[in-house]
Amino acid sequence: MLNLLLLEYRKMIGFRSVRLALVVCLVLPWIWSFSPRLQQLYGLVLVSGWQVPALALAPAVDVLLPILIAVTCAELIGSEVAQGTLAPLLLRPLSRARLVGVKLVAALSYPVVLLAVLFVGSLVAGARLGLGEFAGGTGLGPGSWVGVGLLTPGDALGEITRAYVLAAFALMSVATLALLLGVALLNTAAAALATLATLLMLRQLVVFPEKLQQLLLTTHLGLYTVQDPVQLRNSLIYLLIYTVGFSLLALFTFERRDV
Amino acid sequence: MIQEPQTTSRPAQTADRTAVAVRGLGKRYGRTVVLEEVNLSVSAGEVYALTGPNGAGKTTLIRCMTGLAFPTSGDVHLLGHNVHEEGSRARSLLGAVVEAPAKFYPQFTGSANLRLHARLASQGRGGTRVGEARIREVLALVELTRMADRRISEYSLGQRQRLGVAAAILAEPKVLILDEPTSGLDPLGISLIHRIVAEHAEAGGAVILSSHHLREIAGYAHTVGILSGGRLVDTVDLRSRHSAYRFRVDDPVRAANVLGAQPFVNRAAPRPPYAVAELVSEAAVPEALSRLALEGVRVFEAAPDLFDLYEYYRERLQN
Image 1 (tube, helix red, strand yellow):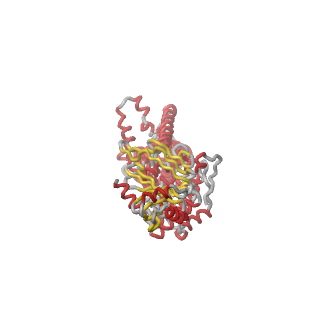
Image 2 (cartoon, each protein chain N blue to C red):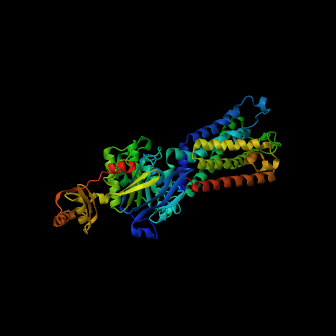
Image 3 (cartoon, rainbow over the protein chains, first blue to last red):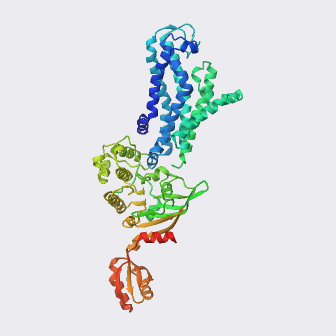
């Protein structure tokens, strides 16, 4: 199992989509840390390097990371089909569930890797603004950017880590959705587009009753901003159901899929 | 060469030497029928060649037999194990190349790809452990030792195809299934594959391969299945054809009757001006001549009745 997982990661490193995503996650925080029109557009003045991670995270989780994750996770299956290497794997005495299981683990770990790179990239980019104690907020904790007084580096790091962990958890559902559609469509482009179309379509349902909103995956992708414990727990449960559900569907779909 | 896989129970089918049994196999894609009621059986030690026009369903049949595709009806058993129900166990007995040229990870070297296949071969129930020595052995067998540490992207199509065959025989499978194994190969490469296939069968393995090269497969296949329009329209036993002799005689009908009554003749039929007989062996020819002489049949010539598979195939499909 570990051998297969390592092989999966070796293959992923070869994907152009992964390399591009890693570059984007490293470059994006620098763009925000230097953005000269931040005050004009958002009325925000950066007072600490601890605020850069939040600036990088918000737009990334909304659009960029779902796109990058959808493409790579769809590619986990799609590239094997395109290269013709899926059939030789399935000719070996390896169960289909195990093969998809390994790909699921790789897909689930991908948002963690991207957010870890974004996290480190943000701290490096924010270092020039200083990473000491400051008056204000990280944008990811109580009081948002204004904060609730003086914030120590430890507290700032805690707020940012919590938000990044929650964002990674939320994006795991997108990764499993893309893998499920990859298994169903056996094509990278089709599966990635289907994933993004599904997310966009769900976002369009904002005009529907609030009870329905609670059930939608897209409602909970902004989990990292939630401070209310009850709301946080509910979102975590919904996201867990989506992630496990998509994973199981991927396993069952692939079990009797013609290759 | 062929080793018993790590299995505790021996299925009933091995007793009758049936290695591959395809029963009532059908495959539809929507309303399109690709395979219909295909039945075939391949014994241990037999080389079975599948042929037929483009679009006849050969590749779909091979994909169904290897468990890559799921049939709409019927089933496939490898040494008694249902490929679609006991996938892991059945595939531990199988070596296959289902695409020409064979596909590998282009970013890895040839030996790294084989090492990956070796690891995968040891997975699941009945998996076989494959060591470095065996990897080197199969690379030498397909004459790719020099290329072992080169990336697949540097391999020619023929070299990839040979590496595919190396991967297929790596775990010393009981059943070898090859789709167009000589596609893209030069004459030396073709004879190399012929040798590997023949040796595998001699060692007791069953081989199924698909090919359009009829005169080529007539040289080493034991049985040829002709697939057309998704149906197996004919099965030709080339072994019996190899032992057929024709006798140019004055009365072919009487000669065929005389020969047909002999214990060393499997089958005899008139084909004026000849009587054609399938003998149990070449050694029975003098006995056949003497019997015909005793019965007063005048024999002008006796010669092997060479079977032209290409001509037979052409006639069979035209009719």
